[in-house]
Length: 357
Picture 1 (cartoon, rainbow, N blue to C red):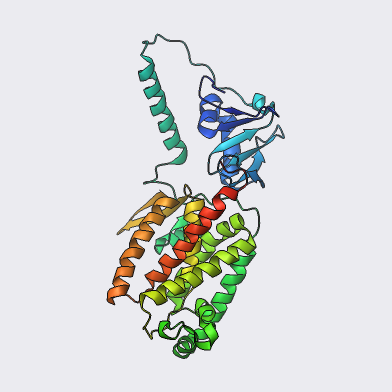
Picture 2 (cartoon, rainbow, N blue to C red; picture 1 turned 60 degrees about the vertical axis):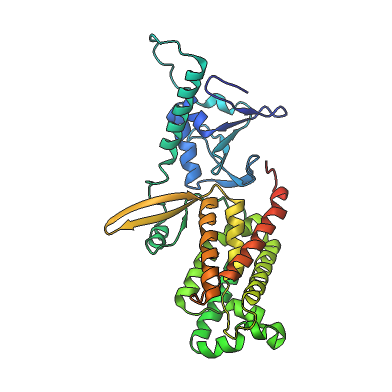
């Protein structure tokens, strides 16, 4: 439906309305719109049905403090769904005072309107290259040490029990091995030249070992931050399958890159690379934040997940070259193998997401 301020979507069956946040801001008074959006970004509501546009779970929040009306909001698409008659409770913006206007051509009016919409969008979201810090204190600490953080985390429909349980096993096994690390790596690490030793069990045991505390913390950080969203999207069984296949294929690619090597390979990076790849493709518009530092000057930078993923793949290709010529001990080939599985998994599941456009 085309209105004076823009286009809204109407359901012919229930007469409900789907309205973009920016159109709501242009149409209704701020005191009518700001409360519901603040409830949504602060996660003050319960998980609702999947968004008809992007397939991510919406959140049901109170429209205001007095009407008792609850609406569904998609924080990724910034769409708000109203049931029949609920928009009538909103307070319209007052009409501007009439004044003499110069009649412009249609093309000029459309260009001006588009510029105003873009300006309002920037005001609402903040500049990606000079944005505010995230609400959670731990994200600022992680970013200070160079870690990426989620700004627009998808709504959760279920608790990430598989991610937590698997991370606990990895941490327990790795910390236990730290006391006799050399012996543990030689016994349970994956050696390309002896890939089938222990009847192939090292494909599994190497996944749970890490070379040090930095290796372990780095892998677990990425696994816990992005794994819960992927588990929520795929469900426990498909999520476990993604990790297992990505880790196995990553090991195979590592072996293929140096089949005669006798250096043990350990770590969960191959499986985690599959998880990261799936996240970047399934939630491509989610914002990933970085804290840029220059001496005592700090600035937050937000980038879409798909762009961060492209940069990550670029650096993995460079790392694979360095690994091949022998100047890097990081198995970038394993990362690329796991990423390939994540890409295939996303391609196979993207059309099965409920209500996906």
